[in-house]
Image 1 (cartoon, rainbow, N blue to C red):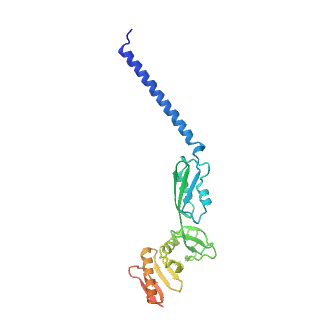
Image 2: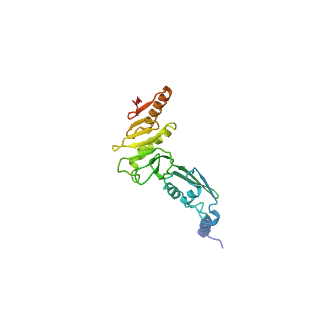
Image 3: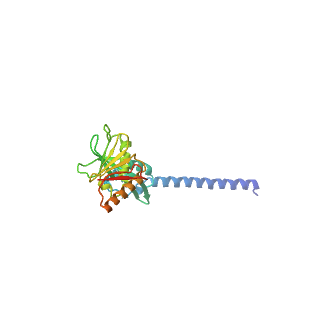
Length: 244
């Protein structure tokens, strides 16, 4: 007996439905298998590459990161690891990435101490952005930042941050000659160089221009055999100096 056209259409539609259902189920099974595989021990980190750390020991960086031999290479929290690392005062920036199949890479940029603050609870190291890095050793030869009376390193970052930045941008030939940077009560800076030269810095603004003015004046004095008493770069466009 002949099958009607409508009946053939119904059978074809049912076949397509079964094929679609089978495809959906297969995709679901495959997705489940892939998810389970991605969470398995086969994709745990096996290699950790670390660059940029010099003050911090590799083991300390790994501990701070929270990465362990159970960390999954696909599902680890990269931004969370970066935040944990950057919470350490020595780490200015951390970049975490993966290299499949089993490697996590950590690149850190460490802060460098440029001075120490002697006032308050004890000498501490200070980075060029004003971040306190920790206790300073007694024999440290970094220049000192002297705070106004009554100040202390704890919570005084805005007070000595400008002084730290002023020291940090000095030319490499000048910075070792700085003995101390005094932060006055009105926030202006004064520097004392080895040999007794006093530098009036003014407010901690236009620091690159002031550092260049200091460099040029000291270079001129050396070339001329002149002995300086004071240097004033409060206005770096019109610096001044007096001879001893």
